[in-house]
Every structure is written in structure tokens, then in C-alpha cells.
Image (cartoon, rainbow, N blue to C red; front, top):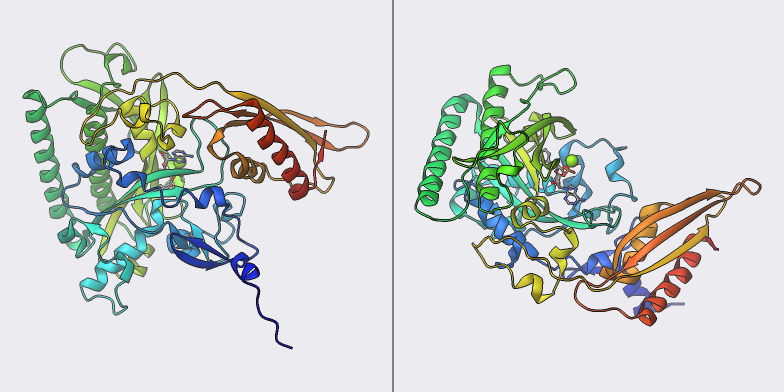
Length: 475
Ligand code: FA5
Ligand code: MG
């Protein structure tokens, strides 16, 4: 007998993301709440603070290709394997990453596009016979540079399963930067790159001197980039090559950060770490330090931190591109560096925006404060009243409970009304050995008052869903 597939069954076996259908399987964990963010396109809305930061970054990289509209659904190959992630890397787990299915996921970082873009450039140069990746065509700005993709930036929304609070949101934005050099002409090409930087500094100084706005910021580096046995140069590279690459990378990053943050007024003399740096005349100092880091796709690697409001704040990861990536991209004759900046982090400093959730606000009191090309310090407006509810439950004895699953469930049911979720109590019963968790959920809207009835309804639904989904026993 032939059984017709019911349309409902059919629709449950597929999900649509940005107009494309994907098969669903046991790996699928991208929720409706998260999928609904995929078309937001915040970095491409000219008056949005993230887009203003993006445009300002471009000014420090005039000879790079700019990619900013690449689909966030990528293959596990692009997100992990192409970047040398081992099979058992924790970042690949379902508790950290939103999978569409076992082969596709919502990119967890903008590095997912490194190899694809490097390859596309080598195809154009005739070094590689594969047909040029079609969807990259027409996505680049600065077309001339995109012809060979020797230097490029990728602005992208990225997705990670995480906790919920003022500095964590499951979607944020990154700016990837990759610069590659002909190994045989490395010193000359680095010199050309330095000349471009000197031109930028000169233009910016002239513009500021003639009242073009913004502070002159000067980066002061406290610790220097160390190369150690834990953060080694690659066997394929010579120490001289790596020194040239590191200098070019750091100076490019310093110029960009000083240019972007110098546009605003949140970095002032008080920001200086000690009175030696503080001065009321001359350029303001921006303390920066480089912390040794590890990424599977770069070595040596660092994280860049800036001193802001009395603390070191990590703003990016960077390093020397693994030569095996250059080789697999059809570029064995080149060497390069790469970075990945958090755009929200830069925008929060530049505009003085205190909470990462504000980037998603539709409140005109937020949106109307920003205009393309203009930087003014954010003026906070009164918050709408919050409503707090607790939920406590016993975990099932064979607890397979993962906190990020609970966080996602809250987000799915309450959407952006869930401002903050905290584990406020954890208790192990001495006799039964069972563990109980109590979570406090702060419900608050960024643009309206919420009613107690409305929140009670959400809270009841949440209680029902966690019982059904995780087999917990409510207290
Ligand atoms: C990465 O994502 C690497 N792909 C960066 C990289 C690129 C390294 C190229 C080497 C070469 P990481 O997870 O540290 O690294 O994130 C990079 C930056 O994104 C952070 O420094 C931070 O500015 C921002 N970021 C990371 N997680 C969050 C978050 N939850 N909310 C806001 N910004 C975040
Ligand atoms: Mg990091």
C-alpha cells in the first residue's frame, strides 16, 4: 500500500532558514527563537550602531575586499574542519553550537569563511580548477580587491548557545580580517602595507586638526607579543617571516582600534591606567595588551585587550594563519595573519552602550540616537519595570540536563522578554541524592511595560515545557 506523506509530517522534517529548506535530524537544535534572528541584518542597516562601527573599520583597510552578506548557515566543514578543529573539540558539541542538521549549522564565528574566500581568490587567479564558489560572487564590496582575495574582511552575525545576561546574547557579530602576502616578496609587501597605514594616520590627524571630530588616540602597549613554547611559530615558517607578519598584524589592528574608538568620547584621560599616561593635552592614551591564546587555525595566537572603565576587556582573537590552511586553499606560496573582532564589544565602548541586548531593541529612543557616520555617546532612557519569577525543579536521577538547553527553552518561550536568567540555588537532597535547581528569571521588555498576567502565562508555559522536555519534577 502506498501511504501519502502528510504535508504536516513533511513540514516537520524540514526547516526553512532564509528561504532555503534544510532536512531535520537528530542534531537539529536551532530553535524558532534563534532562527527568527537570522534575517535581522543589523550590520547592514546604515543607521544601526553595529553598521556604523563596521563602516569605520573599513576606513582602516582601504585595500581589502569586504564581505558582509554571506549566509549564516554553513557546513560543519567550513566552521570546523577547514580550520583544523579536532573531531572532539568542545566547540563542536550540541550544547555550544546551533545545528541545522548533522552537516549544517549556524556559524559560530566569522572564521568559517576564511578558506572559502581564500579559495575563491585562487580560482580567479587560475591556480585552482574548481568552479568558483557561486554564492561569493556579487557579495563583495570593493570589487577590485575581491578579484584575488589576498586581503579581506568579513562582517557576520554569529550564533552560540550561551547564558543570558547584559554581556551575553546568543547572536552577536564579528569582523574577520585576513591578510596574506607573497612569501617571496614579504618584506616589500609589508612595506607597502605600512605606507598605506601611514597615509591613514596622516589623513586622520589632518581631519581631527581641522575639527573633523573625535579624539586623537594613541595605543600604548603594555605587554608585548610573546612567542613561547606554548605559543609557537609553525615549523613551516622562519622566525624572520613571523616577525614581519606579527608587526604588520599588530600595527594594522592598533590603527583600526585607535581610529574606531577615537571617534567617540568614552575613552578619556581618566581611562589611562596610571597618572603617567593621563594627560589633558596631546593625544589620549589607549592601553592595549596582547595575551597568548590558542586557536586551532592560527599559531602563534593572541587575544587583544583594551583598558576600559577600570578593566581589561577582550575585543578580539588573532594570529598567524596555519600554513596548512593556505595550502588547502590553493595558496601554498603565501603566508598570512587573521583576526576576529567582536563588533558589539567595540560598539559598546564607542557609544557607551551598557547592555548587549540593546542592539536588538526596536525602541525609537534607542534607534533614533544613531546616524550613519556620526558618533555620539548613548543617553540611557528609563527602563521599563521588570518582573521576576523563580522556577525550581528536581533533576531526573539520570540527569542529562544541560543548562544551555534550559536557557534556550526560556528564550524560545519568552523571547527577548527574558532579560536575565540566573541559577540562584542548587541543592542536593541528603537522603534521595537528587539535585534541585532554582532559576530566577527577570522578565523585562526593552520597549514597553509588561503585565503580571502576561508574565504568569509565559511562566506557566515554561513550567509545562521543562517538565515535558527534560523530565524534571517541579517543586
Ligand atoms: C573567535 O571567534 C575566533 N574565530 C577569532 C579569531 C579569528 C582568532 C581569526 C584567530 C584568527 P573568540 O571566541 O575569542 O574567537 O571570539 C572573538 C571575539 O568575539 C571576542 O574577543 C569578543 O570580542 C567577541 N565575542 C566572543 N564571544 C562573545 C559574546 N558571547 N558576546 C559578545 N561578543 C563576543
Ligand atoms: Mg576569546
